[in-house]
Image (cartoon, rainbow, N blue to C red; front, side, top):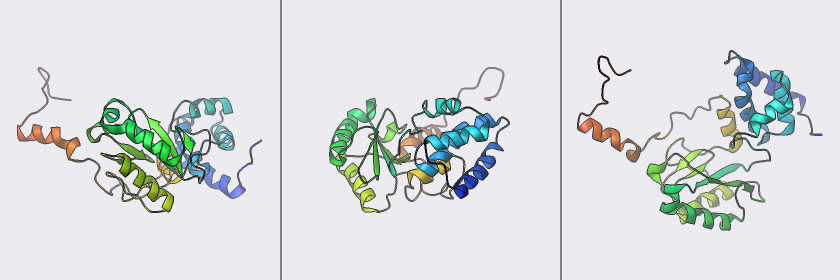
Amino acid sequence: MSTPYEPQVEEKFRADAAEVIARYPDSRSAIMPLLHLVQSVDGFCSPRGITLVADILGLSRAQVSAVATFYSQYRRHPNGEYNVGVCTNALCAVMGGDMIWEELSNYVGVGHDETTDDGKITLEQLECNAGCDYAPVIMVNWEFFDNQTPSSAKRIVDDIRAGRDIQPTRGPNKVHTFKEISRVLAGFEDGHVDEGPAAGEASLRGLAIARANDWTAPRPEGGDVQ
C-alpha cells in the first residue's frame, strides 16, 4: 500500500486539478495533464497519484493506469532530476548519435531508462527528437541541445552533476528540472516561454529561400488557399 499524500499536498493537488479540469467540456479529457501534474509532485506516475487522479475524475485506477502505461513520457518508476534523451534514429545515428549514446551510457554507468545512483540523470535512448536539421540532437527535459558530440554530451552531464545551470541551444535560458517541466506540461505557465530562440537558421532556411524567390503555395482551382 502506497503512502498517501500529506493533507496540504493533496489539497494543493486538488485545487490545481480543478483548474485543469475546468478547461475541458468532459472531465475525463484531463487525464493526461493530471498525470503530468502527478509527475510534478512525485517525479513519476506513482500509485498514489494514479489513485488520486482516479478519485478526482470518477474513474477506476485501471482506466487511469491504461493511459499512464501507454505514453512514454509517463514514468512508472522515479525519474532522475534531469532526463537526458539521446536520439539514435536514422539521421542522428549516422551523424554520430550511436557513438554519443554508447559513450554517454558508459560514462554515466546506466542504460536506457535507468537512473544514476545520485538521482540526477535518467538516460533515455530516443527514436526521434524532431530536430533532424541539427543532428545529432540530445534533449534534456525536452529542451534541445543541437549538433552534439560525445565530448559535448559529457559536458552536459558533468554540469548537471555539479549543479550548474545548463542552457539549451533553443528554448529557455536554462533547463528546468523534470518536476518543474512536468508542471508546465500539466498546463501551468512558468514564465519562460519567450526566452531564447525557438527556431534556428537551419529550420528557417527553406522559408528564407521561398521568400527570396517569391515562391508561394499552389492555389486550388477556383478558390483561395484555406
